[in-house]
Image (cartoon, rainbow, N blue to C red; front, side, top):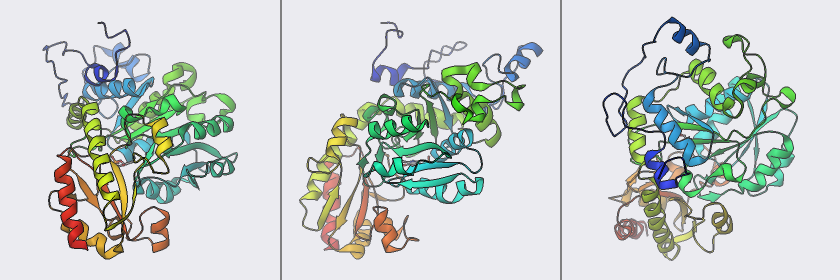
Length: 429
Ligand SMILES: *Cc1c(COP(=O)(O)O)cnc(C)c1O
């Protein structure tokens, strides 16, 4: 089989973007632990700097280990090109820097990772990029939030912390009508569970730190360009449509077409803002990616068992997991995540705040920490940790009320995860 006749997901996860090393024959992707790359001659250097040729110059902008990771995720997501960054938040910064001017607005649905809520509410305000919040459970609130200044719509495919599934098709229709791109954070789903570009996303963003790396050992982010958006219509995205001063007046969209957004993120965003991924982390994340589908299958299988067990437990008042048949997001999960609803969900304790504190203290194998997407099972009580600065009302609005516990189910034996939780729940009363 030649890799040109559209290989399938598991084949791409192992082979896309990589060949044996041309000089040594090394089969695994080497860690190109170098800052810089020697030019063939002066003309070669000039063509690289002028964007007439693609090639490695300096690891802040491009590196062969990073390139393998980028090509592989672009292939798995069905995008035209991709760009790796130091973290998920670094990726978000570069996307917004490429698309927004000071004074612009963007719409984000409220059901988001807490770190993104902070980034949008506080740090992005300093650039005068102004968030307008909408509600994923009330699609009309998104349409109502659109103004002339809106430059993009942002949501998550499976939303943190409650494991809710977003109606990407409906939101993408609103984005199309408004002439703005839909940016989807696909971190909790990974391309194995959901491929947002197939549902109308124009840009996909990832924290590779979570399920794609998958082992809780390296930070990384990724931007995927769907190649579908017309950046030159109405001049609303001047970074892409207007002459670029730092490249001799080149117009990036006119020159690069369906990969223009990814190019702009690299040659302007990454070049000038600087959050590049290290070659070592790119290597570790490639290792994780190669077993993505095996891991996601087991993550989902374990999670449904734990969620079902908890929903029958007498100390538990509710479980929010779209993989459960009775869940209000189950239909959306079937449509957008047919292979499973992910491994992150929340549940509520009848004993409220006190019981939450006791459960996170009572577990032994499960780690009490602020991360998700590890081979290890993880637990957190948001109202005593990540959400403790918020008022009780704000906590409840964010799906992080005093009784809420969040789990990220790992790859241990489900029976051991359940036994550890049962012991902690018994102590919590
Ligand atoms: C963790 C996370 C991020 C931020 O990614 P970092 O790699 O921690 O910067 C963004 N979105 C979601 C859904 C996340 O879980």
